[in-house]
Length: 224
Image (cartoon, rainbow, N blue to C red; front, side):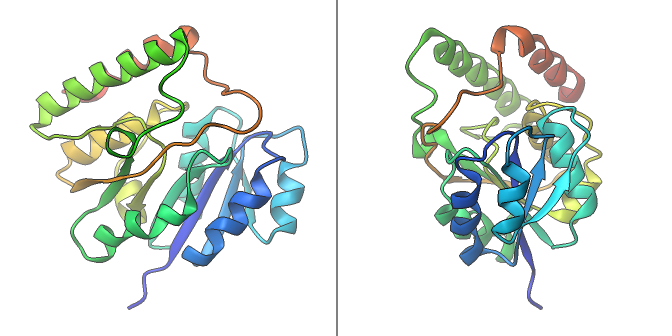
């Protein structure tokens, strides 16, 4: 039986890149869905013009968008990627292959193995990298695994597995929550190398000094 794959693009005010990301993803999936976080530019209009199905989240953050996709998309496999061009849709086949071969339930694109243009540079990126590494150390120690990236949003997961996780986080902390709950429930988590490219336009909406405590609280809630 053919397992349908949906590329889920999380977007907010990404009118300059959304069209290209949609077209780049189309050859590798059965459908492209854009989950829009209440953009005030032309993101939704362009996404519809490019043939994507458009969903609107509740405006709470990336985690809210991911939950919206999990609840409303019927394809058997979901591939999450960002709309800013930092993830290469040509990596989609290697993300879904272990799932299609029944070797994994979720596959995360690892910047630790594939490199990143975003994790190095200024002091904010340095703190981001240190924080990510500390959380990763705790996850690896707790579940006796050897993951190299717990925060990358570029990942594939079986839809039924994603629904079984009962995800709660509203912001980007949902990505570490997803990994911890998969490990806690005994699902198979694999990694493949993927490269994170520099955002071509605009700046990230994540302000670490405002949300760092939410990463710690998410870790503590899910580690036990």
